Amino acid sequence: MQHQTKSNREGILSAIRRALAVPAPRPGHHEGEAKTQQEPKFHSTLPIMGQEPVSSWLPPVGASWDDWRDLFAANSVDLKTEFIVCADEADLNAHLKRLAEQNGWKKVALHHGELTDKAQAALGLETMWVDKGYDPHELEKCDAGLTQCDALVAQTGSVVMSNPSAGGRVLSVLPPHHVVLARRDQLLPDLPTAFELMQSKYGDNYPSLMGFITGPSRTGDIERILVLGAHGPKKLTVLVV
Image (tube, rainbow, N blue to C red; front, side, top):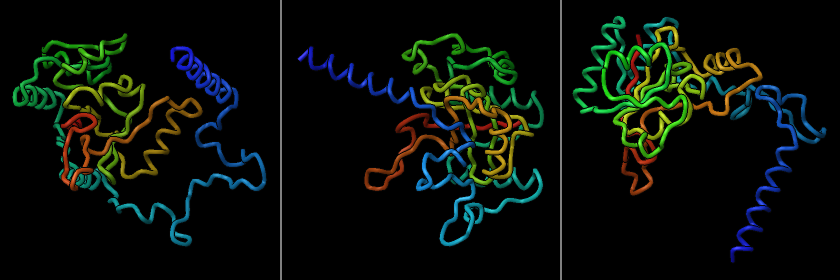
């Protein structure tokens, strides 16, 4: 049995090595790289139901920042996301302290960044930094994970995150409460604008993780009853300053 397990492991690793030997197309450069003429090229404007572009199926957004704020707030209510617009950094610190008191935070996990460093100083709680490694079991014991982000999307109420912007993959997954800190200019109107931002920001050097977080973790698999926190944080709070 041990020999068979070892053989299976070597077979899997061999298949991975063969796959890695074939270069993958860079994000956003699929068009024109089809191997044969029979293979369709990738198009960024996918037609749906005839010739309608994807954008026609997305919710409309307004033209001003106030419109985007109101739409993100409305989506947050539906998604069970707590969304707070702060007047300034002092107001942000006050809201963080309120969250800590209301939720009984004793220990928080963060990555280093402009907003997260200031948040840690304002909270004054026991802190776990994840930048230089971490114990996942200890991270799960933290009451909240505080991260920055790449952008907020008003159209869907989503938080756009990547490895560089959010301190890796874990802060938005393991602690039961995910708190996102963002600047006002990071609130964008729609998904196409968010994808354009990510492409201009990272170019051909896309991070290994890029995700859209839309509300706290949820599932409705059992009798269509909504359960929060099934596969990740039970709470999501977004603070904009």
